[in-house]
Amino acid sequence: MITEIARIEIHPGHENMFEEAVAEALPLFLAADGCDGVDLHRSVEPPTRYRLMVRWETLEHHTVAFRGSQDFARWRALAGPHFAAPPQVEHVRSVHAPCRRRPGPPHGPGPPLSSRRHRTVIAPSAQNGRPSPRAAVARPRRR
Amino acid sequence: MITEIARIEIHPGHENMFEEAVAEALPLFLAADGCDGVDLHRSVEPPTRYRLMVRWETLEHHTVAFRGSQDFARWRALAGPHFAAPPQVEHVRSVHAPCRRRPGPPHGPGPPLSSRRHRTVIAPSAQNGRPSPRAAVARPRRR
Image 1: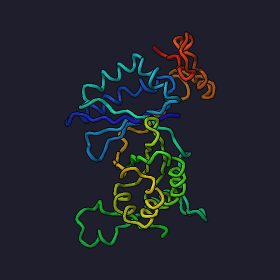
Image 2 (image 1 turned 90 degrees about the horizontal axis):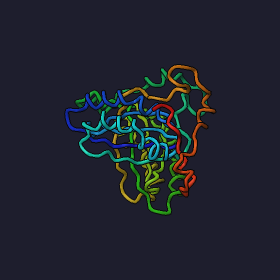
Image 3 (image 1 turned 30 degrees about the vertical axis):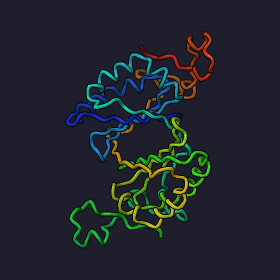
Image 4 (image 1 turned 120 degrees about the vertical axis):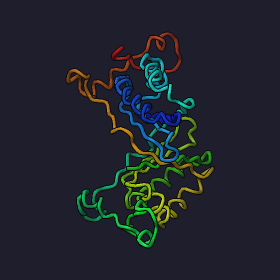
């Protein structure tokens, strides 16, 4: 399995139009042979940068089959007008099996995920005059 | 949910040592409050580039809590000797819900996933003298 990671810089102000274009183009990717899924992510820094991640069975399913298809031309016709520069594309392979946090601590069943996710507390530094409520951070569980 | 994407360039020849260091460091990430999972990917072009992707509940779980922790120092002590340059880190948010291909075609149950995945055929150009068996590409299912 290969993941294509495309870095896409768009024109400022085109964010909504670009996201709508990607939503319209999603079926083109999902119909492509060898495509297992696609996700669009928006960068925090800067917000005009996006990361399109597409999972392919093989490198050639992307670089040969999809790029040579009419659906690739349709994708570029939809999204291309919003590009501020040509996308920078790389391909990666997973090294380890996907590594997810288990719901409980290592040596016991622990609380359910829903309650674990609400253990976040306000750090002392945030309570002492830091301006943003986003400074809320979590108490380390094991140190 | 935030995904940290770190681009890590390592010294040539350090690939195995770096991957072992990351495997050893995985529990540090998974023990960090607000961390929901971590995956290491290796670039195809070039193979000395890696992408470490870590999912955090909030930006501050990474940038404040984890970076200020002793486990961050342990992570850097394990992996840092293999870095050829400081990692380049960005944070992204998912724009759409994760988009996966469905097992069957849009208007019917279709074949099971195991048989669908074996519909790949050798493209005519590959049968006519192209040297690499990796030139095998899939026949488009819908055009």
